[in-house]
Every structure is written in structure tokens, then in C-alpha cells.
Length: 127
Image 1 (cartoon, one colour):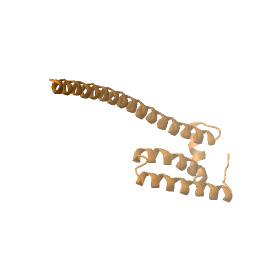
Image 2 (spheres, one colour):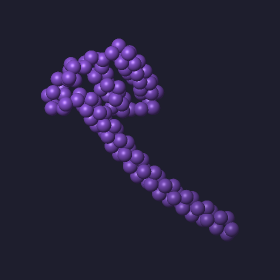
Image 3 (cartoon, helix red, strand yellow):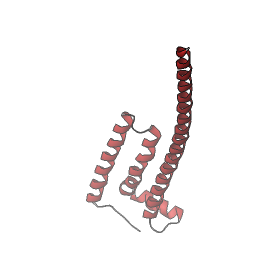
Image 4 (tube, helix red, strand yellow):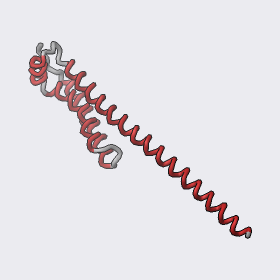
């Protein structure tokens, strides 16, 4: 299978990659996303770039893996990236849930202690 991307495809993918990576780097500088997330999310732009800028490499890789159509490798690699990101997100949410539960328990204990101290102080002032 011989594939050569058209100039329109090259231009469109180049604009997408530059814009997407610019936004990711900007968010990383502002500490909106982690460096690890930057690397993972940037791979979602780099993989399609490989198909446009290195079609021979992708064809050889598809032949080596034994896949008939090279775009199967693209979708497979994108699914892997999305699943890794989803896995990391689930881990973060579970950690946050445990932390919230712990904080709620601590707030309840502090509230109980404050109410107990207020009851003691009002009892002392009545005597």
C-alpha cells in the first residue's frame, strides 16, 4: 500500500499539531496540567503527525506488525493513550475521594470538639 499525503493534509495536520501543542504548553506553564499529562496528551498530536510526515516509516511498521492498513496502528495507539489517561484520571479521582472523606471526618471531629468546649465554657460561666 503506497500512501503519500496531499499538501492540504500536511498543512491541516501541521496547523493542528502546532496549535494543540501550543495550548498544552501554555497550560503546563500555568500549572493547569502536569508535565506527565503534557507528554501523554501531546502524543495524541504526535501520532497523527507521524502518519503525515513519515508515511514510509508507518508502512514499514504496519508490515512489521502484520497489519494490513497502517491507520489501524494510529487508532490503536490513540486508544492506548486515551486509556492510559483515563486510568490516571480514575486513580486521581479515587485519591481525591479518600481525601475528601478524611477531611469530612476531621471537620466533624473538630465541630464536636468545639461544641464540647462551648458547652463547658457556658457551664463555667453559669457557676
